[in-house]
Length: 120
Image (cartoon, rainbow, N blue to C red; front, side, top):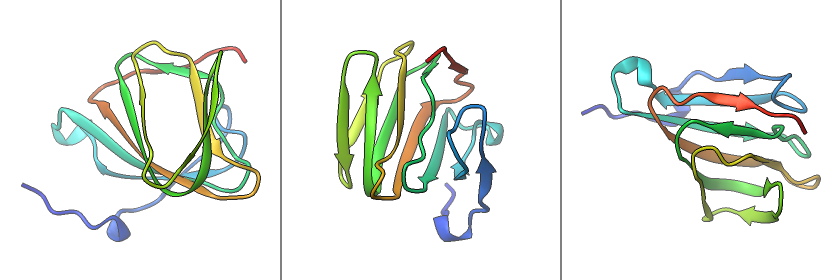
């Protein structure tokens, strides 16, 4: 067992080509540690999002702060703290902050999940 306080996890800066601006990620549990899961806290500034992408395995997003948008090719939803989103493997989607709020979610995927950016 491992106890991790997110405040002590180093922030990594992420940006283009997947994101429309700079976001930060904290990864308390990674597949490199031998875990069967990968868990990331992803922090989006106001109006910043990622571009359409898909994952080789399911992804679960747990909203912990602010307001965001999650979208597929057919639907767009506003989400808030407490919402849980499930994106099945292979589904093209994007997620990020609304123009008026920063946004943080926890992303849970299977270890070694491949992310592929797709044409917008």
